[in-house]
Length: 311
Image (cartoon, rainbow, N blue to C red; front, side, top):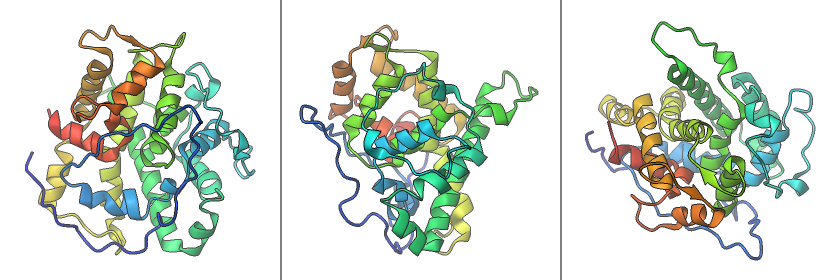
């Protein structure tokens, strides 16, 4: 893949991540996890979506998860009580994990829960254009994620896959994981709780499906949204050569390959390791970028690893 230019595409307009950001929810005995700082070719093309106009950065991941888990069409317009959001003992066996959650439901979730969150209510109602860019961008991302997951589910090119049955709530966890604020340890502990059995996490088909969704959201889906949002003056076009280079590491096969790389990094080459929470957590604290699992929490980290392992 060719190197991309490093200059910023344009001067950022209004910024939505000013102030103190989300209120930390650290527990007394749990230290924050510091992951490596990642930088990948082309990050500047996503700066407006991932930093300047990213409303999710002002919401704690724990609040996002609480709203996502409890969301339904029936309670879409009801206010959530976030006093319980610190309870992150979710499990793969919980009914929410396999609930169908298509693009229309995600749009309702963004409009009625995310944009109505107390941390965003005022700012989202004051700046209509940026709110529109934010809302539209993440809806495009989830829609394109569904399309890629349907492609992944096909056994051959001729097989018909019902898109409405592909997207589940678990696939939207990655949106919050990558783009919400809050301490990293809450994100790591949530992942562990969802996939652990008897206080150990091991390689599984469900964990691999989760990884694929996260990797696509940090690469192909954000690029798809970036391309479609170019119609807004605040976003702007990407040059064809740059777009070609970005696509080169954002194809489905690249994320599929990274799932294998990540599984081996976490569970060993033979995928036989079974990890406690402390062992799993330690992987994210590894300072060597190529050995750390910290990239799972970072769109830039995902793109860095995709570029390092391009197929």
